[in-house]
Amino acid sequence: MLDNCADLLQFKKYEAFVRALFAGPKGEWIGVQEMLGSLGLSLPAIEASVRAVWLSSPTDGDDYAFILFYCDSTGDSLTASYNRALLLRSD
Image 1 (cartoon, helix red, strand yellow):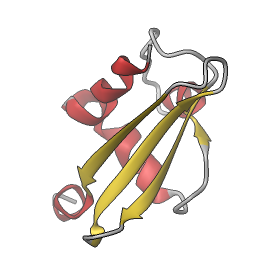
Image 2 (cartoon, one colour):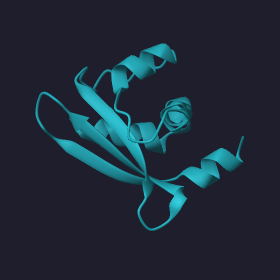
Image 3 (tube, helix red, strand yellow):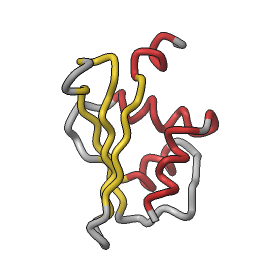
């Protein structure tokens, strides 16, 4: 189920999602489907109960982010490291 969340971080067409996630405060959970909808994007394979949060990397500071996806209905989680500095430099 959460494997599709990796698509949000991997494919350019979902870059707006990643930017919106990082635009919010660190440590604040967001509803993934809700945010996708507000951006005019969709990824139907992701349940409405999936949430995401980001934190600065414990070893690389604000240059890299640690992203956690969590599904309320199953308790499953997926984590990823993301080069936040590279994304923000492309602005």
